[in-house]
Length: 272
Length: 311
Image 1: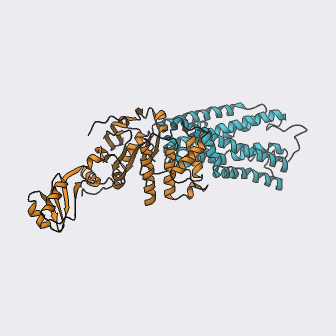
Image 2 (image 1 turned 90 degrees about the vertical axis):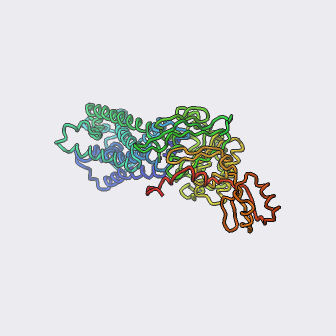
Image 3 (image 1 turned 135 degrees about the horizontal axis):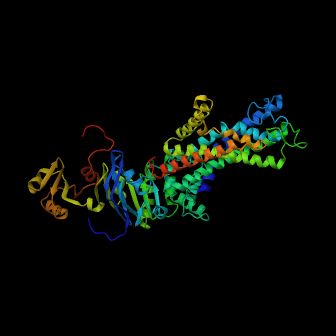
């Protein structure tokens, strides 16, 4: 069943269009930086963006920082929101279930497909960013001292690669949280758009509340609170506090919403 | 109803479904036997589709018991459903893929379809429904009739023992309807039980051996079609000599008009001989049979989508 879902994902032209669109933003940023040489001052703007002018190999991380707050979650919300509600709207859900495909298996396969989409997108973004970064942006510190960590000290290449993978894993866990919420809404709503918009509403509300001092008490529980904590993985020494809290929070979101989605789907009358 | 020794294929006991306060299906006892072409009749909104969905495990019953192919449903769905081909409320497919690829995808879902002969089975199924030479255009570009045929092909992928079809000839032209009817009868002769849900009485009357009529969620009638259409004990006589016949058969003529009489007489042959001997010119004469429409109209009350005052 997982293979069927992956085939469906990869054969859908929209999947590739979405990835292309997501990929376009960091590419545009790279071109603009290369043309103008105007990076944000250190400590301002998206993470790592100030560093890429000197070291282009850091651009994949900068690209991740650009894509993670908005583009990727929107794409995940749409893809996961469509998982059940989209099949229902199309009428194909009933034909899958009477094949028969178990409801738990179907939900599992959908989740795997959404995550495959995330992995694919992140990989495409990172690869494009690496190519553009090395071609267009600075290549000064790579050989001499090694790339600098956010804290200023230098890192060896294996260390950088390891931390990059940690950061990618962290970002994917954050997207898994989004996918869980969207999948849950997809089992509740009859409309894929409703499920996607509901998820986005939650993320926007969360982002908004994070800027509000009065919401201080609930901020640690908001889904987007620790999203950008992956930057801390590049400090020296690694600042684990926010990353670990972020992991814990996302795991709670995933468990709660996947559980709710599963329970709802198992007892749902499929009447579309 | 006569006792039937054939194994039961679909059997429900007091099957009930409530959506909130509305009872969509009310204590239905279905009984479909192997080899039947069973016509499941009912007006729109009478609960046909909900019943079919419950049988297939899509809608969960509020109460009652179901068996399909001798096993309890929906608990044995994993064993039973691979042997069932079903079409519920119109066909559905992924619009951006070709018909062939759609079938291959559906075949790959769930157990029962091995990969090695998938291509052959997909080709066979398409051939059977008359789409054997279909090109690679996406389903998006299919006509309604082609989609309907594709849906049927999807039911046939695994050589099902039971076909559950909801309005299978919807959207087809007369030739298409004829073709699909032949196909279903062919399959039935080869041993497939067919459960056909429809609101088209003529279609059911032409194909089915057994009918069940659902009215507002209740099964108001379930019997062999031949039994329902048994002679009524009246004979219809068409003749230009109506007055003469009335004089001759005084007391048994129940209705008449300008050129036609209804005569209560169990033996049309004897009646014919008698009329001809008396010199009556008989245009035509035959035993009256009830048609399905009369039976259904008598059993059912009103159209389910009617929300006005009782007619």
